[in-house]
Image 1 (cartoon, rainbow, N blue to C red):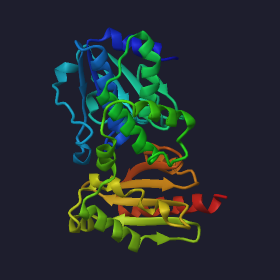
Image 2 (cartoon, one colour):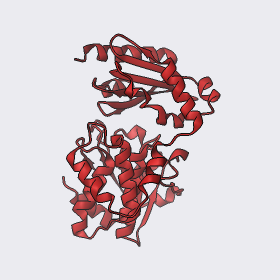
Image 3 (cartoon, helix red, strand yellow):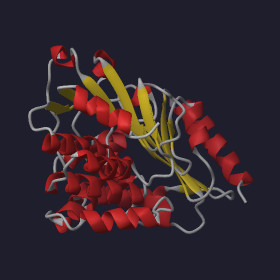
Amino acid sequence: MNFDKIIQAIHKFETIIIHRHVRPDPDAYGSQVGLSELIKQTFPMKKVYVVGEEDPSLHFLARMDTIDDSVYNGALVIVCDTANAARIDDDRYDMGDMLIKIDHHPNVDMYGDMMWVDTQASSTSEIIYDLYLYAKEKGFHMNDEAARLIYGGIVGDTGRFLFPSTTKKTFQYAAELVTYNFDRTSLYDGIYQINDNIARLRGYILQNFTLTESGMSTIKLTKGLLNKYNIEPMETGQLVGVLGDVDGIKAWVIFIEEDDQIRVRLRSKGPVINTIAAKYDGGGHPMAAGASVLTWEDTEQVVRDLDEVCKSYK
């Protein structure tokens, strides 16, 4: 499949609703809202909506729409940056007339009437720019806001172009996107500046993480600890990478206690960890993945699994 069928669908439908994954990150917003801006710029008469629970820390990027169920009647639904159907934010995604998946995660859950999945892309935002470059010959138009969002998504998912997923193409796209008129400084500030309570919890993590001989590290963020620092579970996404600069750590897991489950956030500097996430109904990339478990006893098995992966990594 090429982009033609996606472009044909965008042409065909007058109402388009774009979803992304729960607990969004900059790439989720960048691809979702960046695509919506491209469509609105090209087809100003179409009704285009972006939906999902908002993350206050990402208000600087975009705000979500609130729509009734009836809007899905006769609509095209596009889901960005979401590997598993279970992780799609807003479960009305299957109420439209057609469903398209656009993603860069391993294609384990092949949902939708059509899919564009490119695991070689640094981010789903990079794929959206791929789509634009192909579609501009067919009349699609970029604007400053779409460029800002797509660039922000690429920056977020490449860790400011530091992650191995960054390629020559990624840099080429970034160079083209920065020619548009948006404030890169404020964009970087929005992605990377943190409040003082997040900074203090970061200090707690650096003082209290465990490290095994295998190079595996763990940290537990209980509800009591989060309350002490006045932090909501959703905000902990800003802390996932904090152990990445510690020498000797091959892979790490951060457990975040929520009201009804314990969030499992896995990161790695070498060992493949998305297979562990899949074992607990999660998923993600080989070096960055997530899942959830129900009890602290369950987390002990996750730790054992991660330790084994680190022991076998050469």
